[in-house]
Length: 127
Image (cartoon, rainbow, N blue to C red; front, side, top):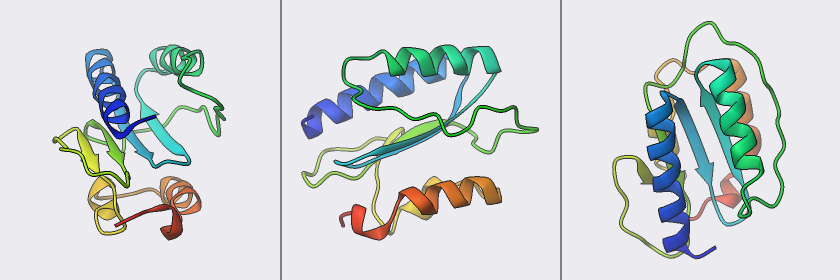
């Protein structure tokens, strides 16, 4: 996937999630993506199945599917770590080791922190 295609796909994802009332984050680089999606259970499940059936998705693993007491994210955004620079927006942002903390909620849960730290190792993030 080219950087421009990654950006366009991410922008579409943000638009869809906003229209569905979903919140969360997607962190992506050239090797993997980690998505955390919050919202009404049935809507989140339908969105997950739509993403899983997308021809651009090679592999997808559902780590957890459970109700949460309160949403952690105020909005939905995608954070891309790409070697080729592109123009980012408020909803599709540049992911680097320095910007990762800005992508996280103010009061991050232990569950979320563990997932992010497990998947976003520094060697997978380019400056």
